[in-house]
Length: 320
Image (cartoon, rainbow, N blue to C red; front, side, top):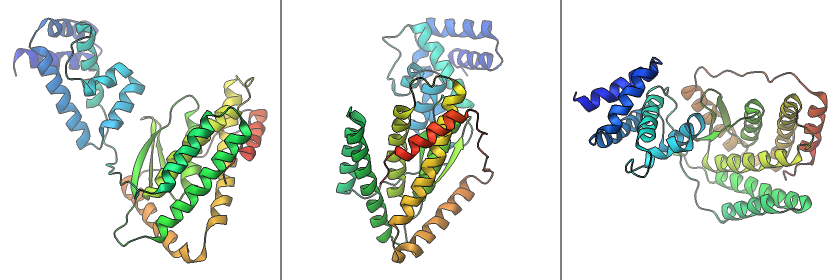
């Protein structure tokens, strides 16, 4: 190990042990070393490969660094060099990223399989984009309702075309603060209603959703839309944390009930055996990838007014 590699190791070890003086000294020496940039970027590449071996894909890493560090730290994953930055700050950020990647735990390795191209998907996205941009609630509700009907039909069409080689796959969706628990609950009920399963890893800031490709696309699109609806429906005077937490928790709870009813209404008798096999396959995938996953009870109601208004908003949200 040459002097530059030793300095990188010293900087990282000092950060792990909170020896700020040793860390700052090593970073200053690296900043003054003209050959250090290449070694730092090479170390970063090795750290990314090691994280990939533990299940972390580039998008997972970017999201994690942006959330727990900063967008500037996340941008280093795609940087060709440290030029154009304050050198001392850039070297310090590289050390931050190296330490952050080293401490990442092993997570489920996912290989997302895209659903077959279908005209309905572009129509669904277009409807939801219009719903999010319109200033008229009635128009937004009609657009979301149309999108939900298309999602349900598309998912059932794909199930009807099932082949013996079909298997569940997965995606990771961010669950950002504030009110992560309520948002994770909303994602859970959306996933369940679309024959998927969501496992929330609160310490990592995301949920892993397992299911079949068309169903996963429905979950991602609907969850994003319902988050927007909940935020829009939340009373502007509901600034207290307990009120907002209870509002979102209630919204998730009652949306779950409505989604379950809507899903049952769309089922046809001939598809029940296929859907039952898919449900079993998804459950098996969850047990294999998350053997220690536990069902956690939701929080008790903290604000009755927030709960009631969340229930009202859930009733008014258009799903089908």
